[in-house]
Length: 322
Image 1 (cartoon, rainbow, N blue to C red):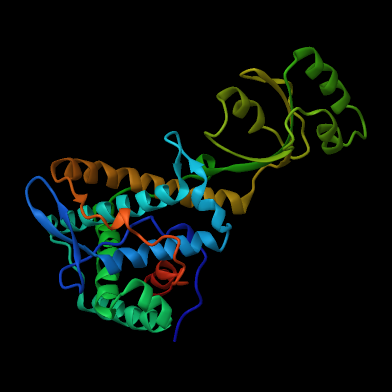
Image 2 (cartoon, rainbow, N blue to C red; image 1 turned 90 degrees about the horizontal axis):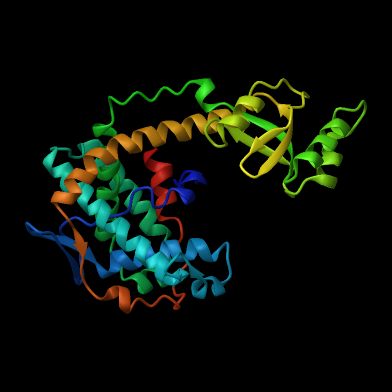
């Protein structure tokens, strides 16, 4: 029976990308490196991953998003998304080559669990999904195998990384903030804000040059001058005038320790630390073993053809394997 899906796997769909192992069905798109040509992805596997991401975005945005220009190069969002899928497929293939070097493989229990996942996920696909992608159950299994192995590689190479993040480092506070660009104006507003019975929130909405009044602030996110003045405030206390860049700030502390936001930031900082440690190893290997996805499916992908509705390939993985 399928478990309840977790929302975090929507956001993490490309935290690792999906790669193919040997034995897939259909025409294969090879991957070339300087030293050797390694087996790549079937067109069906590529279509499944791209369709998953396309449909995930389609649930949030209208179909007009695909023509929107993004980035410095002003490529369309469709081109951007295809490029992201291609890049991450290449990355996880590289991760699996590194796993070969490190002699990291899956246990029989992991393979059995991945097979169960594959059977349940594949049975959830509609006939239209299967017809659109051309995917077989074995191809899905190979995708999940390398996706999981890439994650196992990360865990193995970072198992000795210190993941402890102090409360002080991760601390998040909630403030209300008035920002103006003139020092004399800031002085007048500060005097008014310090008056008895003044509603700081109403004052901020009336005079601040920034429309966002209430903000969450974590260590390292603002200037040193701002943080030195704000992180020592007790709840309901108002700061002196803070000069930060070309702005002058008056800040009231609403919550001197946002426990939920601090925990979330602590987890994010720990993951960043883990990722940095992994990238040091990965990038050296990738530089010596470049992998490039070849083939022309990217130029002929039926992006506008919405014959598939599947959007939860990564969510199924999160339910089963996390």
